[in-house]
Image 1 (cartoon, rainbow over the protein chains, first blue to last red):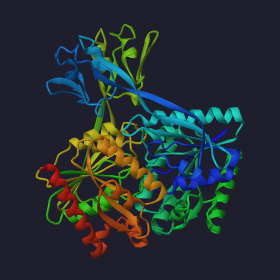
Image 2 (image 1 turned 90 degrees about the horizontal axis):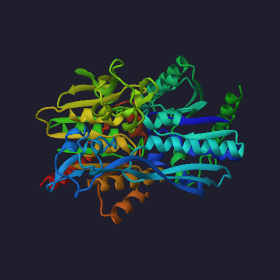
Image 3 (image 1 turned 45 degrees about the horizontal axis):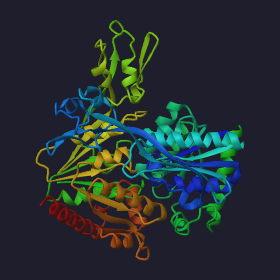
Image 4 (image 1 turned 90 degrees about the vertical axis):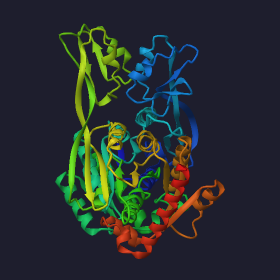
Length: 292
Length: 285
């Protein structure tokens, strides 16, 4: 089993469009997992038929039982997150601020504080229109703990791959380099970087490479919008060479990305011969790399 | 007055809007721009780095004093984040999981735990004429983005007329931390299949936090009505439309403030600023 995760650092570089197309070409050879749970998009192109839907519980929030509260204020004093305030004369938890650490409930002399585990979203296993397994999740509105949900999606994809003897897991990662990005890179065999030839793209790529080097994972890179800033594109190539990252494709700025989305198809299905070829080539290269 | 720029989807144009709004506003006001996208802060790329100061941000992590610890395991049981674990006669701290809640410190029956600190990131301040950029920059391999965002927001500059928060992408922990105490949210929408989907998510998120909001449509084309129609149906104000254009994308790609390049875009952003300020004032009153 080989796990390939797509990351970019900067958002909007074309990660999801490219991974969705790779998953479409791979078909039954790959399980596809959408780990950008904050803003999951791939299901919009995959027409998933849901096989299982499971509620995901994670993290706690405090609630104060007013009838037991003696108003001592211990809870508010010990809270490091400014989450307990007096509202209309009673101590009240600000759920947005509450970190779920439970310190207040331990310090309450009246046992008036209950910690409740939160339903933060759902994860799904499904069959996509490309006949492969597709695992994704939806985080509830204004819910936190997305890193934990990312780990869940990955572990579900892994056990499916084992059961069904599928060779590849293709993972769409989140933007950034923090908690959810680190969750999605953990345990992967290969990182496919999709960057863009902009000053921001290059800056964010350098930080992403820092994470990749830390985890010591092989990586290859696609430069999207390669003609937007040719100097930036050149600098990206230099950074990649220094870090032994192969540039496997450059894609010029094209309306095909938006047009394909408008037609609700992946880049592999969209009528752009040159782009179709590039996507096919990327998939072949990735497979070759993993066999070496 | 504080306004927050959000988008849900990455690459929708948050930073483009933030730096250009700051630019037009700074002509006759003092502006502070907070770059709260601490995982990938980009706003500084649009500034001259002529006056720069940097400070370190740390968070508390527990330190176990071996001589005092009796290995009772209370710390391990009370920690909700599995950041401190007691096994046999060893008590181990996992700093990357710690949320600095102090539960282990407060509840250790023999006071064997004291405060230690680890650096999670930096705050950089860059002053360009009337604009002060305050940037949070998470250290590589750190996961505590919300904790750093909290510290960046505490950094106050005197005599500021307008504060702009350039927020992180997504709809979860980091963006909630960024916008939870601001007065008015500007949602930058990209009218693509993905952009529109994430736009609806972030609008719901902002509304669930009881925020007032307005919308800027980026990469706008007259024939695409996705966001436009949604705003109309849901009674949301459209503050402005930035056209889909290779020139804008290319100027952005080179780290240029597009308003400096094109007078038409300057008046577009001036109009957007006027609408934002008018709406935000109505709320304050």
